[in-house]
Length: 366
Image (cartoon, rainbow, N blue to C red; front, top):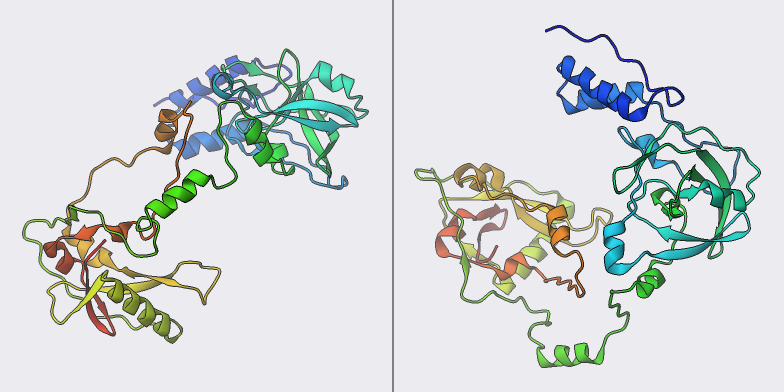
């Protein structure tokens, strides 16, 4: 295959950005560069990005997020979401002047139009920027430059970069400023139109807690009229593995956890089983070596070898968030020992048997 000669680097002073993108895409196609990592490397070689890095300035200096993007420093004007809730505004002092800014978590950088920038009387010169911004509607904007401004908010004071652009662009607080400013999110959410916020337990909630005490008790619950089944491939041979030795530091807590689960009826001791997997004790909090642990069966050498592969597609979080966009009420349910509220059928229990230095245990629940 004939290869296209090397393409020059992007020159923002002389190159039209859209035309350069088209030439670059043709360069990738002509040279048969399909691998994503190779494309990423090619882009980084040719697109120069300039950020603000002044170590002599004291305070919090934000790194422009565009320096870490593959190609463009993006910011979004969330027009569609504003139709539902309206923009979230916050007042911030910039160089001593009060400025109303829109909080936009979709914006990689903080943005201000040049007319507003001139009004705050910033004495420093704009630094050149190698980034190109892309609006929510897909419009490309080449910034006039980046200025360093003094920001005061809620007792916090620091010098931060602001990206200055031409046109009728809203003044945005992007993620670069959010990394340095501790915004009062609780108060901001309370002011948002269309969101019902409650920071105190309503009397109706207390009534429900008293009416259904079994639902909120510490006892292990159970999903009624349902049992889980773990299928096996036809002709799968049973696999039995001996118990693995445990570190002495974990023995006492492992015994306590096994006894607790046996008392709850989650595990039951058995004398014989065709299937058995060793256990792996896992600390629930890796930062606390003396804290509680979770007992896991090492099923990759037993169950995973004999169970058919589940081809069910894993749901995408973006799709889920899209389905609840514009919603009025949201509920968060945190079930205690959620999986252990699902009972196993008899054939699956032997399949999931674990082998410990205290003997064999079969689970009655997931």
